Length: 387
Ligand SMILES: *Cc1c(COP(=O)(O)O)cnc(C)c1O
Image (tube, rainbow, N blue to C red; front, side, top):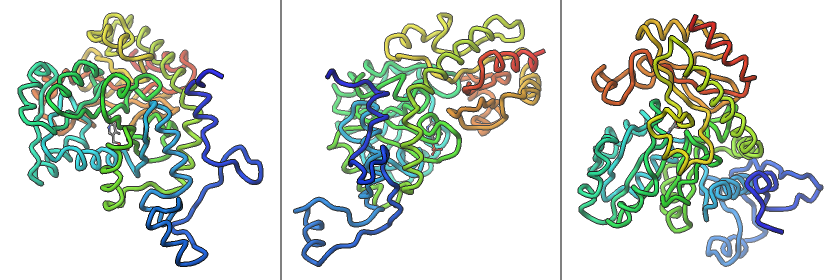
């Protein structure tokens, strides 16, 4: 048999055959594990036999099965599951960013806050480069062992960074590369295959897919996973087995959900491009988009996220958001339901207008997380609200 595809693999991801014949594993809601005798316990502690000791350490069958599935999604050696996207990001930055972190382009607000308020306070050097300064990356990698960190597509302007090109520069200078792959999802983009060393996800978004669980993930090599797992263990960032089981269930429909998110978002983007009250549509799948060519090279689908600039500025955009009925006015993204948010009033509220403009975020911008409702209904909703 040829190597099975991602949908086949994730649906049949299991570590053990269930003794009762269930196609899926039971949920191991346990913090600890009992032993027959002291020798058996010592054998596990001494790593002479395989076994579980304590769930926070990451040794829980439900969580390990999830991690095997996560790794498979990006063809990685190792997957680590976390209690949130920020848990995955913070543990990774602490484990691999000690010699300095160089960020390129726009970052998720929580990540930026962690870098400024915590990493810098701990004495870690953190450099932020605008995407326009990406050619200066090499100059900032003047000592080996640094970590290059970025997101692509970025929030909310959807601008892309070339994972292969930046990874090549980083590796020439002895740096590692971590990419936040949340917006694209593993179905549309595989950073590790493009040259990155660590791929991160807020699993609260597409991986979970139903806006009902908070979780995070890291896909990487066995060697790079180990120090991150040590931080996760000691910071206590593991997710609950029940949440892990829910996430495993969500992953079985990830390939088909993402296909539909891609299709719906492209239909919405095309309809919005023609709308007289929309001055610009930011979507990697449109040939009019600045980074479309790069998108066709490094993405296999263009995702469910897009932004539109509406005429009339801040108030007009707020009005559109308030009049939408299918879209829910909420932050977050990646769920089955369509969500709308106005970046200048939510994710980028804390920035000055000038700082927002520098990032291509206008007052009239609306960010859309296109869900899995019927595309005609999503488009009709936008049209009535814009009218
Ligand atoms: C939501 C998000 C995060 C943070 O994830 P949490 O699960 O909320 O901790 C990180 N990066 C990106 C791009 C996100 O959208």
